[in-house]
Image (cartoon, rainbow, N blue to C red; front, side, top):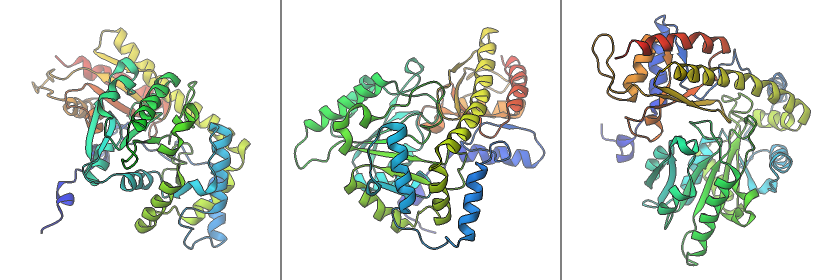
Length: 417
C-alpha cells in the first residue's frame, strides 16, 4: 500500500519502543524496574484526591459537551492568576490556550510558525524536537550539549546557529536531564534572540522561542526562570508550553496550556480546533476548581515533590557510591522534573558470553536482561549512539524499587570486561 512520504519516513518514539519491550518482558513474568517512560504509576503517585472528586462531580453535572476552542474561561482565568502569583507573568485569559496535554501545543507552535525549510534550533539531548521538525519539514539543528553545563545549552553554543532561524526550542527543567537554566544562562540566550531580531528586516520572520516549562512546579531548591521575566522586551517572541500533567501526576487527565502573543495563540487555537485536541470539558472544569485552591495545591505539591526528590536522591547517591568504588559511572545532581541523568560508560565492553556492547542501546538492553533495570539512552533524544549518558525516570518506581535495583546494577557492571 502506498502512503505519504511523511508517513513512510516517520520514526516512532524510541522511548515507547524500549518501554514496549520492557512491558512484554514483564508480561512474561520478568520483574524489571522500569525507568524509561516519563509517566507515573498511579498506584505509587495518584492524582490529588480533590481533583479526582472534582472530575467525577463535573461529569455528574453533565459537563460533557464541547468546551470552548481556547478552553473554559474559569480555567484560563485561574491559569492567569497562577502565572502572576507563581512566576510574575502577566497574561490575560485571551492570551492563554488550553489543550489535551502539552503535546498538541508544541505541535501547534511548530505549525503556526514553521514553513517547510525553516530552521529550528534545539539542544541535544531534548525531547521530540527532532520528530516535530520532521512533521513540519523544518531544517533541524541539534546543538550538542555536555555535562559541563548540566546539558543545558549555552549562548555560546547556540549563537552560531541562530542567524536566519525561525524557532529556538528550549525546555527547563529539561526533559531528559532534570537540569535547569540558571538566571545568567537564560539571560544571555535571551539577549542573543533580541540582538538577532533587531538585525532582521520588517518583512522577515522574527526568531521565536518556544519555552517548555511543563516541569516548572517540580523543582528542588533551584529557582525556575523564564525568558519574559528576565527580558520583558522579548514577550512578543515567546510561546510558553505548560500544564498539569507532570506537577499533579495527571498525565492521563490531559489538561495542558500554552500562552504567548495574542495573534499566535489565536492561530494555534484554530489549529488545535481542527485537530480536535481539546482537553475534556469535565477535566477543565475540575482543574479550574482545584488549581484555584492555593493551600490545597501547595499541600499536594510539597508531599509529591518530597517523594519524587527522595527517589531521585537515592538513585543519585547510589550512582555516586558506585563511582567511588571505581565503576565507570556518574550522575548529575537532580534539580527538577522526575529525571536523573546517569553516565554508564561501558560501550565496547564484553559481556560474560563474549558479546561486545557496541553502543548505548546495547548497554541498556544488557542492564535490562542482567540487572532487571531499564533506562533510556540519550540517543533517543537526538544524541549519537556512542554517547554513554542515560535518562532515568522515577515516576513508575517506588523508593524501595530504586534501593533494590542498585546492587543488581553493581553485579551486572562488575561482570563486564
